[in-house]
Image (cartoon, rainbow, N blue to C red; front, side, top):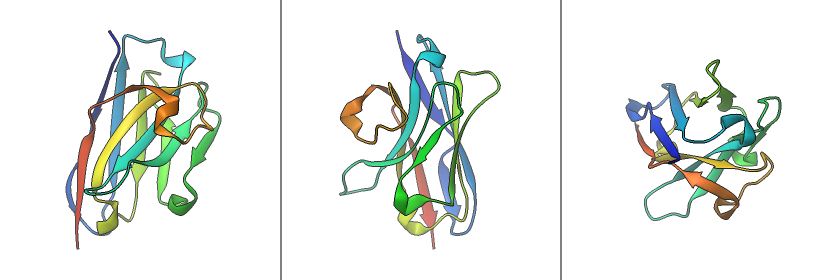
Length: 123
């Protein structure tokens, strides 16, 4: 059974940093590209970032370049999303997903999903 479990969210003040984690089990991690998406209240799910199977290639939403960094952990079954200089508009549920290409930016292109972790940024 495939499981993706996110952690690291919370309530923070604007300007703070967070590192979100997504730990995978039940799948061969290096066969999947991994992505992060977010969904704010009342809005559609939005692509944030993705990383290739090897970890060598990354892809970021154009509007989010610079403050977000996706990486794969040394254990090779964990993907991270570092978010710096958090803004109130970053408030959302952040979810990780496993797919087939780091160039994919649509939710439907990802096969497995975690439940998400809430990030709330106060001003």
